[in-house]
Length: 539
Image 1 (cartoon, one colour):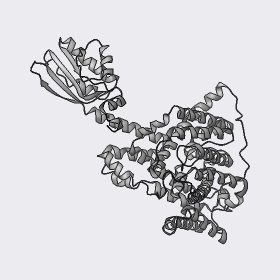
Image 2: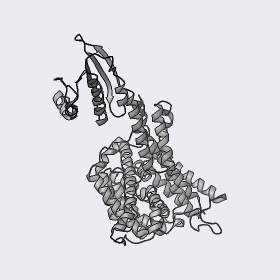
Image 3: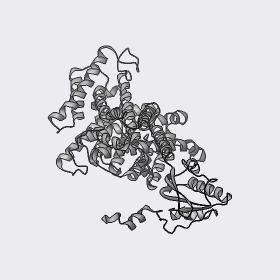
Image 4: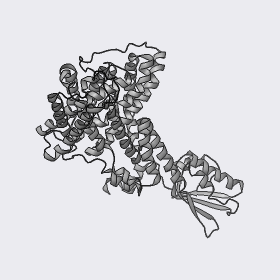
């Protein structure tokens, strides 16, 4: 019931324009859409990259270089066309202590090792384990991330740098400047909401940025702009070997950070991969995305970048703007590089209010509003997981939230299955007693299994039938052996029926059991079973 309800409402989490095919063809119209979408994404990347560089304690160009290189490489070889990657806050907060204690060169070395670990994960196909993330965890993930994106935009309502004479940087805006910025944010959001109802020739976020920026520049409005955060002018990312000693001590310093960064980066990227896949009707690509993220970070570490991973906010901007092919991500990265090399004076004039308005619309589109309505309809544990993952994402980080959500869901699943073990019993004409075991036998249900038997009151011959059960793990085998030992100690004969052949082999080694069921199935390999029964191949 819970699964059906979640599936029913999951389709309503996002309502993007899916008029384009998931395998969009490179028509002139699609290419134009991808280029304009890429430009919109590039404009939104600038303040994000600069802000995350500040969080990590490095120069703004370190964040911008990461956004360019990670975005370009993942766009070229990533597992999901339409995804956007770059410098992210989830990684930046982990980097703070490393940079503060050891310096930026150790950060570059850590990013290189992070990339190697991610490539290894892709080669080992560990990306497939993202399938183990339950849907309630996904709902909590998107809700928590939407809240995090919203909270991150609130910092734009503080005075950046020394933008306002006589006002200390970091103070909240007030008075006319605050009301002006709020009005511009509202104007941007209104344009993004209304324009698609009139035309889809130009991506609505790009139009919102352009109109708001034109008003601010034309009237000289006194509001924070991109250039007030930091100058984005720079050169092409130079090749740079991390200046760290190549010894065991360095490895001991960077390895723990690299493992954490690699895990966070892959979790966020793979969850974004699934989310974008649901919106665009695409599947697969997890291992390819791991390798792409690893390659991007490996290269970035040698070009003075802080590393990165998938960015759900920018990915949502791209998908909602119509970006469906790799061209959008490539163009976004190239536009970002052109801003650094040539157009920094112009980009620095863009008001932060326009970019905040775009991100607020991303928040509205990302948050799973229908999850609020289904909380009272799904099982209590599923509702608890949704809320738990949302809260942990906001107050801790994404990786911890997902791990916590998966663990709680797994424990709840194990507990529910542990309570399913029971048995029906009857006597045969020969005087033997038959226990028909129903429910899975695994580590969580072994105690309940042992309580099913009346060893003292049972006759000399006892049969345990596993036709409606499944012996799952070593704990289950040990439980069976323990019961068999008790019957043997009582001088009684125990027979097991309908066990798989793999269980036969393991239990025979115990030396206590009598197995005489020629009709026991061999279902160690599900594929073989399907072939024998004609389920596969349309038979």
